[in-house]
Every structure is written in C-alpha cells, then in structure tokens.
Image (cartoon, rainbow over all chains, first blue to last red; front, side, top):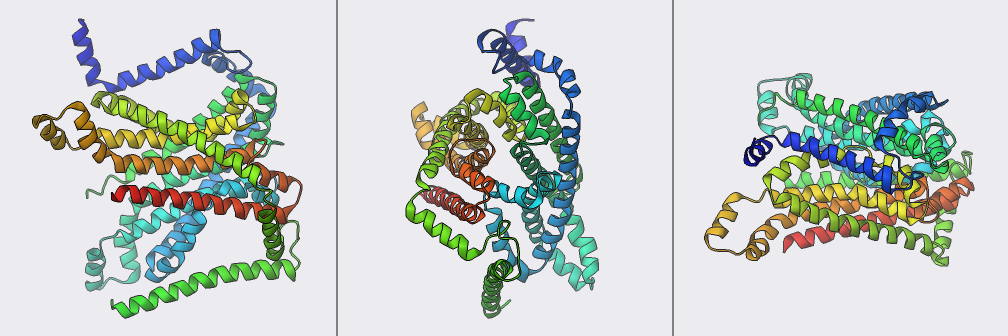
Length: 258
Length: 255
C-alpha cells in the first residue's frame, strides 16, 4: 500500500483515526507515568487495570459502588416522575405556565452546590441526602424540556382535534402524548446528566462514608492506582447510564420526521 | 385572545408569583418563630438578614470572594485560550472535525467532577485544583462551539470570497469570523457558567478558601444563620455574574 492509498483510506474512516487518537492518548499516559512523572501522583493505565481486582477486594468498595448505583437509579426515577408531573402541570395550562415558569427558572438558576451542606444537614450523610441532591439536579432540566415540548405542539393539530370534537382526554392521548415522547426522552437524557452530577457531587462531599471516604483515603495515601481505578469505574458507570438514555432517545425519537 | 385578557393574565400571574414568594417567606418566618422548627436546622429569616448585613458591612467576605473570583478568572482564561485555539485548528479540516468532534462530545458527557480527587492529588487543596477542574469542564463547551462556529460556515460565502480573490487574512477577518462569532460567544457564555458552577462545587468538596469553603466551614460549625447569609451572598454573586455575561453576549451579538 502506498502512502497516498493509505491516506485516502484513512480519510474515508474517521472512526479508525479516532480510535488511533484514543490509543495514542493512552500510550502517552502510559509512557509519561512510567518514565517521567513521580509514581506517587500518577500510575500508568496498565497498572490501573491490573489493580482493579485488588480494588474490588478492598473492604467496603463493592458496597459503596452498589449504593452509588442504587442512589443514581432511585434519584433518576424520582426526577423523571416529578419532572413529568410538574412539567405537564405547568406546560399544559397557559396561565400556570405564565405564572410558575419564572419561579422554576429562578430556582434552576441557583448554583446548587452552594446549598449542598443544607442537604447533608437535613437528610444526613446516608443515601437520602445524595438522592435528594441528585433529584434537585435532575428534576429541573426535565421540567423545562417537558414544558418546551408541550408548548411546541403545533396549534393547528390541537385546533383540528378540538373541531373534530375530541375530548380533553382524547386530545391528551392522541395529540399531546405522541408528540411528547421525543421531548420526554430528550428531557430524560438531560435529567440523567443532572442526576449523575448531583449524586456524585454529594458522594464526594461526604468524606466519612461511601465513595467520598475512599477518594479521600486514596488521595491522602498517595495511591493513584486505586484512585484512578475507582474514578474509572464510576466514569464507566456514568457512561453506561448516559448511553442507555441516549439510545432510548434516538430509538423513540425516530418516528417524527419534521 | 384579546389584548385585554392578555394583560389581565399577565397581572394575575405576577400576583401568583408574588404570592408564592410571600407564602414561602411567611412559612419560613412563622415556622421558625412560632411553630418550633429547630433553629439549628432552619434559622429565622430575620436572623439571617442581620447576619447578612453583618457579613456585608464588616467586609469579612472579601478574602473568600477574591479567591473564588480569581479561580474563575484563571480557569476561564485557560479554557478560553485553549478551547478557541484548538477549536479553530480542528475546524480547518472536515476530516479533523469528524475525528475530534464526537470524541470531545463523548468526553463532555462524563461527569467531569470525578476528576476533582485526581486534581487534588496533583495540585493540592489550594486554588490550583479548582482552577484545573474549572478549566477542564469549561473547555468542552468552548471548543465544541468554536468547532461548530468555524466549521459550518456556509460554503457559498467561502467560494464567493475566494473567487473574488480574498486573501487568507481577509477571509478570516471578513467571512469566517463574522459567521462564527455568535456561536463562539454562546460557547464562551456556557463555558463561563459551568466554570462558575464547578468552581463553587469543588470549593465545597475540598478547599482551603473561597465562598464554597466558607459555607461548608459554617455548616460544620453549625452556625446556620451565617451559613444561610453566605449562601444568599454566593447565590447573588453567581446570578449577578451569569446575567452580566449573558448581557455582554447579547450586546456583542447585536453589533
């Protein structure tokens, strides 16, 4: 294969180059961690992966990860139910939209990390505070997206259904509901990134138990192998959860062609 | 719908909003003053107000505010310069866009707050780790919007300018930049907002100074009225900075 052919082939497959870039980054990480950087601060990816087994055998880590996963799912479920209910209540009536939406946007605009200590004060250091904090991050994007989605239904569809004598329930079932499905999943995706941020923030904040305890322990012990392992496992958890809702969004958003 | 009813709806909705806020404040006041809600869990609003006045008049917030603002400024400067530069370089070729855009977007969807323990290990508990985290998180919206701005300029403009003999500099100055500028500004605004949020957040997690640190410190000392005062102050600062940046964005876009 000549150089030009190779170049042409690469241009047709950006995915391959992307993989190569990722591999190069890992290689850079490996090389720099092995030879240039003090091993008390950074360990190479090969060592991190090899250390995963030992990490899972550390007492308390599997439980902490399980609890975090459970908190994420519960917080997400609550956010979706709450966000859907509030979003529909606010979005479906013109008046409640006019009056409540500014309040919701005001609350959404508050940097929630400043009130994290309050959540711990009220809900303790157990799962309840992390779930509550996750919900506080997840519910607002869902509400805002649902409201926007309900409002984006073309008025002509509503008028047509009205003039053909559809009841309120029929309009909801056959006009609003199918139009909501793509927005609903878009909201779920945004809600999921909010929930991930909220729960992980609260987990890292509480340093006496759970993930936060271990990250602090590994940081203070200058044990980058375990710290990176734990962070990678959490990141993988986040990626999987994100990917599930993103796939769902793509799948259920397909029917709409406009 | 008539204009008159429209106006009536608007007034009524304002009333609902005011009523809501009054009800919240009223419940807060009566709940703490008369109905025996624990003062440590929820301080009386009047107390909080006095504490806030005290904080503002003594100026004791200044050192922490300075630290937080300095961290935001450094983080934003780093993410702006690297994000815009890299975004421009990537946007120069469709191939590079195809390679890097999904990669960067994928990274951005990971909750990057997870990097904080790592950065604390690298840069310590001081401002360094906060600046690094804020810069990392705000880098992504800036670079993605810069790519979107420069990379998707309508082809016909470029062809027209080229066929009229525009030099590279002229092309950049009169075609690419005006087309990309609004999109980049949006990216910068988003970057600023997430930098602000992540720096306040990381200060509450692990720090030695700053507004977030102060709030946590007061929470641990159970000085809740003063903590509420600081929360109100931090929220006001955040909202002020965000609205200022949005206003700047709108103003720059209008020109």
